[in-house]
Length: 241
Image (cartoon, rainbow, N blue to C red; front, side, top):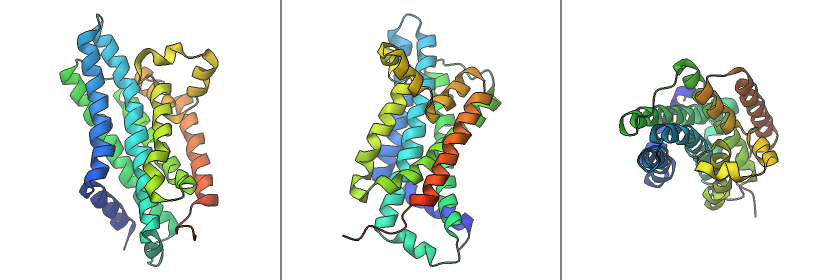
């Protein structure tokens, strides 16, 4: 078994899991395309509102398809002893996790780009002025949240609780990136400053403005923190009762 095989295994299990598809694909795509479409037709300056809502909603794809997906999947495979069996093969720990992360990143990037194309046609949202930075920010954000999602499994005691325990994460990420419309503007300035430090907010800022230096540093620091957490606390087997 190789790293490519681990990648294919993760992708195959993802696309065959109907519950995972509903939560990690249909829901974020529906929100990321549906909310800009709604704003396009209910606001006077519809295109501007749709554009702002779309970029904020990409944080939902990153946090649900990226963070939640891998946190739930790894928790399930840990409790089902799949990870333990994979460790008995010739794969290293790094290769096992790299395959899972790469599979999640591929799915996340594909969904963000697909949503961009969809809102261009249904809500007249213009394509980004700097498509290279958009793709780079999407890729960097997807890698970052996938690493953090893998690290987060250390805090999940059982697979049954994984989905519920990731809900606060994507809600905070959505609000912080502006996916919930004017709600962010109603919060105190210090709260908005804290939200700006989130990796999803950094990725959305880069997608929207084309600025990449500061967001890239933010994503790099969060990714490093996730890797350190994986190194220290990631569990390959369920806790013994």
